[in-house]
Amino acid sequence: MSGPRALRQPMGLRAVSAGFLGVWCLLASFPFVWIAAMSFKAPVDSFAPNPLHVLFGPATLAAGKGLSLLDLAAGAAVLWIAVRLAVRWLPGVVARGTPPGWIAVGWFVGSLLFGLAFVAVFFGLLPLVLGGLDPVVGPLGVPVLGLTAEHYESVWVGNEFYRNFVNSLIVTAGVVAVSLTVGTLAGYGLARSGSRLAFWLLIVALVFRALPHSVLVAGDLPPFIHSAEVLRPLLGEAAPTLYGKPWAVIAVLVSINQPFTIWMLRSFFQNIPLDLDEAARVDGCTHFQAFRWVIMPVMWPGVITTGLFSFLLAYNDYLVTSLLLDAQNQTMVPAIAGYFNRETTTTDQVEAVAAAVSITAPLFLLVMVFQRQIVSGLTAGAVKG
Image (cartoon, rainbow, N blue to C red; front, top):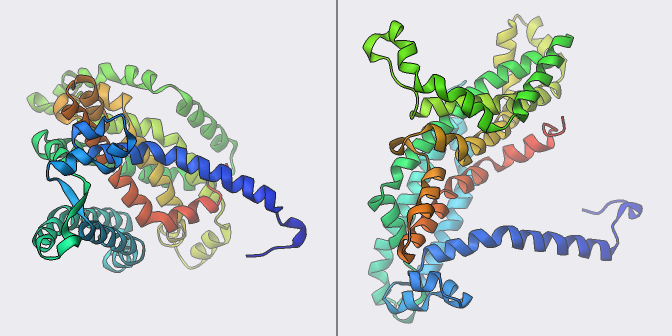
């Protein structure tokens, strides 16, 4: 798209900007691409001094574990179709199949089912089909790239990494649900309030957000450890100990994240004209009905963008989860750190790398599914205030 001649950048400036952007993209993507290549190779290839061995895996290929040209083409086609479906088809299905007022639940269920279907097709059905086609297609079925998924099988099945995945889903779903529920109500109230108290409440929230996470964990740790004694007069002998349970982590992460959530959502609400509230009130809506039926449908890009930040906080947290969860309830990030700390053989190290690569798949899925809402939310100005 062309603009006024006076505002056009010189060719040299555009070339320099593109060069810096290209270098940054290369530096940012290199670690993930490299460990992803390592995770699909035999240990001798994964830690080979020659980078070409890490990429192409000659030792892995010699062991009879590799992909043919047909496998590569079919895998690329399935990935391309999955991305297209996630971007173009899934949003419409969720919108049509979700009852009014349950759009957040619909997105969560739809994204989860789509991810499970992709895993079943890509890692289950596709290898079975290609295993029968490779021997009959001649040169196209001869392996040319060393690759094996045995490390992922060892991590998810042998080491039961799926338990850590389920724990991460519980923690992140709880943090996102509580943060957005409280944040939307508080952000709407503060955005529509003209009192000085609202301003000082936001300042106090910002101060608590700036506190180190270790301070909040240290303050909450004794009550969680002694929670059974505190709750016993109310619940009797069935009083639970919150320490080591996901609910304790959800409470702490919500307290850490809530000020940021309120600030973001307040900025979104401030960008919505007051005329919408007044029109809803004239039509007979209460304040809550105006918020629920008029304001929230306009706010969904902001809610999804804020929810993504809440998700990333809970999903990538290490300090809180490692201190408050026991070994049976650990989420994925502390579990992976434990793999790297205790494993010594090269095979174990490659399995730890495979576990690290595994946790990025939900992030890619979220970005693909919600890319339009995220871009709309960011450009609406929520990150300016």
